[in-house]
Image: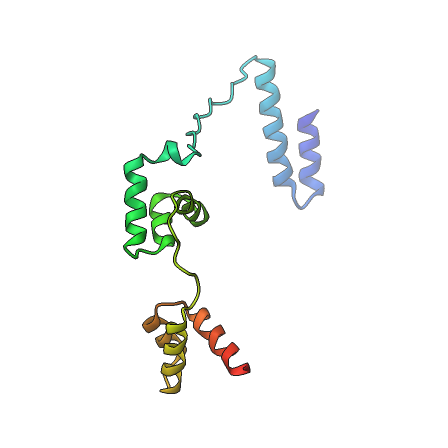
Amino acid sequence: MILKLVEILGHYSNRASFKIDKFNIIRHALDRIDAAELRRPPAKKPRPTQRYRLADRFTPEELNHLVTRYQAGEPSTALARESGIAKSTFLRLLAERGVDTRPRGLTPAKEKEILRLRKHGMVIRDIAKRVGCSYDTARLFLLASDRT
């Protein structure tokens, strides 16, 4: 009966080959069921478990080393990325250890330097590189300072 349907579809449908393929797949599956040749799905590989607690991920010496590097001036973003943790987690780690974090954004000295360099005609991208901030930080600061 299925073969008759396939022949009829072949005559009346533009997408006959697609439908014929589907019927063939169904026919082969039914043949395997009839012959009791069902295959079990392959066993899934066990997923590696993630260690969520920082105490499980790092030894106290490693944590102290990260804190020391941060206090030496390395950016928190780079240290967090290198350690495989989120920046917010790294900042929480610093707070738990009683470490004062550096202020975010532009310091007054950087703001003065941005204004001075802009008055000398530098483009924002070069100013941002020289001051050590992102292009957008420098651009938004300059926009805000023009309004005042």
